[in-house]
Structures are given as C-alpha cells and as structure tokens.
Length: 393
Image (cartoon, rainbow, N blue to C red; front, side, top):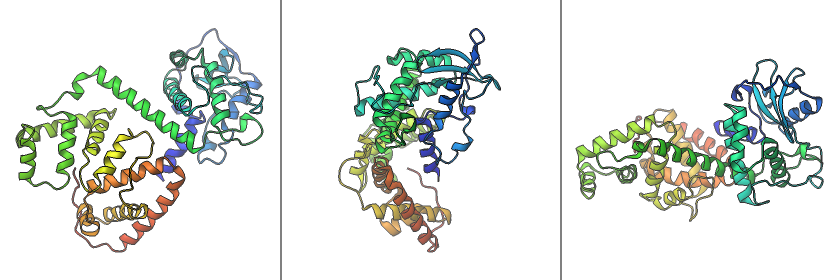
C-alpha cells in the first residue's frame, strides 16, 4: 500500500538510510584521503541495525563499507567518506553506540534536553541536513552549523543522545536502538511541516508576485468563495455571493482560472497549502466545524480537536464506497448524495478530521485500511448507479 511505503520511507529516513541514488555528494577531495578503517566500516554498516524486517532494507547500499573507500575528513563522531566505486562523497556516523544507555554521556548541543520540543527541533535539523547532503555533503557540513552544532560529528553525537532518550531498544546497547515509536513519528510529521513552512516562506520571499491577488481576488478569498460554491450553489446564488465582495461572474471566472494556473505551476505547493487551509477554515457544510478544527492543526500530524463529525466506521465505509464507485465508473458525487446525503466537499471535511486522528495514532491505520477495503468490496458488488462525472470544488 502507498501509505505503508511512505511509512517505510519515513522510518528509513529517520534511521539515516538512503539509497545511493539519493545520496549524491559533490565528489570533491581534499588531499587524497586515507582508507576507511575497519571500525568506520563496522559503524557505517551498523546503520542497518534494527531495520532487518523493513521491506526493501536488503537493497540499501550502505556508504563507507568498502575496503578501498577513502576518508576525506574525520571528526569526533563523523567521517566524510568517498566511495571508491563511483566517487560519491557522504558523511558517515561513526559515534560508538556499543555502549549501554547508562554509559552514554548525553550531548544536547543546541537542544534543551529530553523534551518533545527538542525531539521536533532535532528532526527538523536532521531533515534539513539530509536534504542538503543529498546534493553536497560538504555543504551539509556547513549547513548544520547554522543550527548551533559545532560540526557534523557533534550533530551525530546529539543524534545518539536523541536515540537514547526517544529510541526503542533492541538490545543492551545503543546500536540496537531504532526510531519507531508514535512519539518519534509524530515529531517527524511536525518537523516535516516546519520544513514545508520554511519552503513556503522562502518561495514567497523570492517571488512576491506568486501570492498577489488576481483581478482583486486573493488566494484566501478565492478559497472561501470556492468552499461556499462547493456546497451546491446555483449560478444566481454564486452571483449574489460575489456581489458582496464587489465581484461579478466574468471577473470571478478570470480570477479562478488565474489561481488554478498558478497552483498548477507551483511545485512547492505554497499556494495549494494556503488555499487548503482557507477552504477548510471557511467551515462550510454539515461538517464545517471538523474542517475548521483540522485546518487549525496546521497539518502537522496533530489530532484535530472537537467532537467527531461521524463515527469512525461510517467514515471508513464511505471512503470504501467512493473507491468502489470510482473503480466501477459511477458518478461519485451523485452516489454520495443519494446514499449518504452529503457532497464530496462535506465528506472531505469529515474524512480529513479522522485522518488527523490516525496520524496522531498510526497504530489505527491497519483497522482503517481493513474497514475501507471491506466497504469497497461490498459496494463494488452493488454497482449500477449514475455514470461518472467529474467532481470539482
């Protein structure tokens, strides 16, 4: 399943594992370097510890384990290694984790100790470090200093401290610890949202015109009116709504086309994110409160507040039914209205509220998937509704 693959990718990322195609370095060299030592090979190979049961782990090529690999730089806790076969350069964690948790001396660096905030901040630092070293390992060595680490070795020692306090033990020593708890996954989601917000801020700063109103319509106003329109407004009702904002239908159509065009070319999803929050924040439809609660989370993996918009089992049933209707060529929106008395925008609000609960408790996804699959099978056997029409909102 796609979600399971994403979770595996997330876990592999947290473990510091990347396929070599994703770890290209700058390929440069200092003064020739020295051969990697047996200890460095061992510690590089130990990156796979605890990942034996993850699908695809057997295909991960660990950097720094070859006899002819060259060490370009050594720090206390890190080695910059050039692969002998393809010349790729990458940082390898060489901290000694063959110690018990009690034996490890904590090093928190710029963090504030064993708090949830420290975990989230560290995950944010690591994500930025990994993104930077996927393009240029040497540049990543400078990047990590921006967050208050002395060097890469210092960063890896802090990582081991994080592993000690937030990892799950798989043996007596820290080399058996892995990041796999709900707490870690939730922190990783928050860190991912922080990275996305960072990208959005950088995108908006570099291209101020990206968010400039079109025909006097801001992206937020475009989303709010679209949210109302998605509830089944007639042309006359839409025109009346537009008039309250000093707009007419031709102006609205041009603005709508302009925002759709901008969103389609915005690879950072900056516009789409702002649009999505404003759309849900408009609180339209029978589950508008759930939509607003979800938007208030900032999409950072936190469970939306408030009461549940519908029972969990019903949400799963509707999701499975929609899949079945789509697979059998039926009109999903018409079938939603006919069978469950709601439109696609309304169900999306309820569904997104429940997805936020699942993200805050990943153990429930297995139950969700089973219920959705059962519902899809049931509704495929009851095919025969209106033929498919595009859903637009």
